[in-house]
Image (cartoon, rainbow, N blue to C red):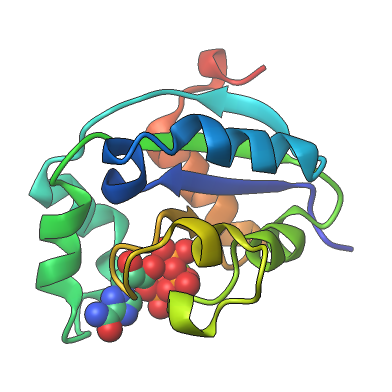
Length: 139
Ligand code: RTP
Ligand code: MG
């Protein structure tokens, strides 16, 4: 059975552009409940830790630099089939390939500065949520 939680971050480009509120509105209107949320800044080292799975990829260095370039808004979200439904809501990694009406189609600038993160599995959703939030920050 699919899990009911996922993890997201509104990325530095979208926060800097003043799109935080619009993105949160889309998330809530799509039926996701916000379980945890904060505004924070990653160091390049901590961004590297979060994206360690991409360590060998050519874009890893740029990704760490970008993800630490400004504040982000991480959130834990709850909904049936959260991981899959959230990835549908955000659209393809490259906004050029994202469906109309998706968050990335509306707000992403490029394949890197693509507005939001979405966990790719229930297991990673739990790991990523714990990376940012303690038990006392989840409601
Ligand atoms: P995310 O993890 O952020 O939800 O994105 P995703 O699953 O759609 O994409 P993934 O393959 O996990 O890549 C993680 C993030 O790295 C940046 N990226 N840059 N320059 C490039 O070719 C490239 N490819 C990926 C994006 O910020 C992507 O979201
Ligand atoms: Mg990913």
